[in-house]
Image (cartoon, rainbow, N blue to C red; front, side, top):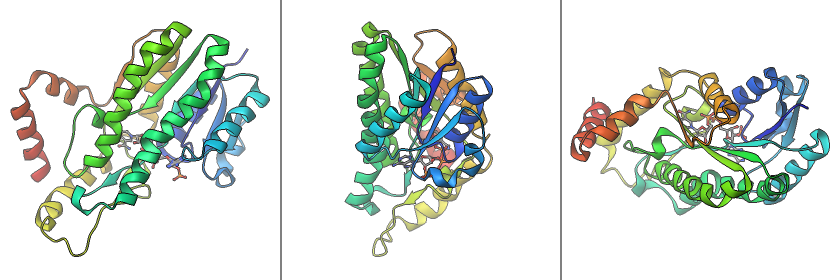
Length: 269
Ligand SMILES: NC(=O)c1ccc[n+]([C@@H]2O[C@H](COP(=O)([O-])OP(=O)(O)OC[C@H]3O[C@@H](n4cnc5c(N)ncnc54)[C@H](OP(=O)(O)O)[C@@H]3O)[C@@H](O)[C@H]2O)c1
């Protein structure tokens, strides 16, 4: 019998590439997104069902899960991929921007976990894939709020694994480095406060440098392969870096002060 996967944030980037890859590997795919009516290309592919799901709307999560089970019979794995970056100085961010960042990247991901766990416990198996980031293990300037959400995802996922492993449910954390997607353009939310000009010189130097890391990056298909491996490798391994091994190794072996100096140097150039 074909296996079934539900993926959030499937309209673009990593989510969309992951939908396409699993379909080619003979999985049935629930490609969930906020506006499925725009996904003409995916709608035309066999074994892909485009379903509305906004991670901040619990009702839409419940009905997307039910629709997937009704259509395909079960769910074997879910990928919590939906997310975006709130970028800029912390002081310029509004409380509403901060709340939305956490509602999407953290509470949205938790909402999906809460709704899928009864199904996985009943089946005595299942895999939860949480797309965190290398930014869930290390930090860069101007991303304090995004990092706060991804560090939350790392901690949440790691602790969750203890209580769900006895039910034969796996948690996998994906840690991509920069990937060329809508993350650096359409999806990005910028913090700006007109009357606050104290940071202007710093932002003018560092922001373009951070944006460039996205321009020269690989595309989402690289992360889709890592997600496919995480779901199918049969192991209990938890963390899967993707184009981020070098940075994570440097973080592990360098003293803190030296690592922070390196990041300061490389982002101010
Ligand atoms: N690109 C990178 O450098 C990078 C690196 C590490 C980790 N990541 C993570 O990878 C994941 C995917 O990002 P991406 O790079 O593929 O960027 P992307 O192309 O901008 O994709 C983001 C997806 O999230 C969806 N989304 C946003 N808010 C949502 C909500 N409330 N409910 C459901 N879906 C929502 C977007 O849907 P709409 O089309 O409706 O906006 C879009 O499909 C994110 O969690 C991101 O943090 C990205």
